Image (cartoon, rainbow, N blue to C red; front, side):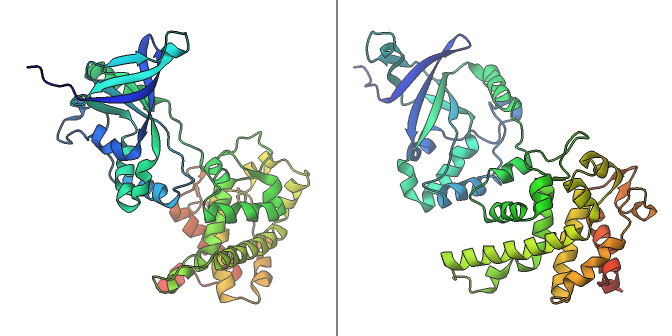
Length: 370
């Protein structure tokens, strides 16, 4: 008596890539854990078809799915099938032969070549929001081609990925409050609006821009650091209303705009570049005030200045006009100028913050420790 065959029947589109067949299907999210059980982590790397799962990444991705159930984006999961499969086309015409059903034995082994963290995040997200199980995720299915070729496939799929520039990531982010505040401030501060590189994190010598958006982001967040945790002062179960949240964001934007407009009025060099009297490349080469380490320090100084002198902070800020911003100023040596280049380290930011606090009559970290 023959053993009955139990199968998965998947609606698919068949294609040819690099001379071999592959299939594209749609899978309900709730079936992902069953189709793709994880490999044993006890296997050595040479015996696995992909890298070990980075469990630290999973909660962040799962939270993204849970918080944005109607507005998330998930790329396809690429996998290999180790089994004898059968493709049944829906018809005999040219286009019909590309569409059909894929019969896969239930004892087939599915191995993820790309997307294991998405699969794990969906499993975690389902515990909090079971309705996500009815969503569908695209699958790209290859016939199993052995461990060596599966490892090569993983290397190929991941070898050409380019990390997204932090400035571009910020520019294209329309969901995050931080990105909203930063972009709103940039629009309302003229030197930022006209002289900020919105796409790249670094500027070459020919760029007509003075700042990178990622540097402006860090500077604005440093300025707003004193009010970042205002929500935490409220009861843990308190949820701000939409109106309260909008009011708080508007307040942050207004504070930052007033501060950075004041800073720009006390650094005449920025105005020279703005009005095209000096090239941006020359200014970046000869002065330190447009570099990220100084911008972030200016943000930290602003937070302290507005806290200690809420009524006269702008008057004290005027002392910025007396700072020698030239890169040849010997004051910078060993502080923000190390080995002939401008340092971006946290230690250099702290050094520059204390330097500016001294000039503006604020207590420094060193003075507090004494």
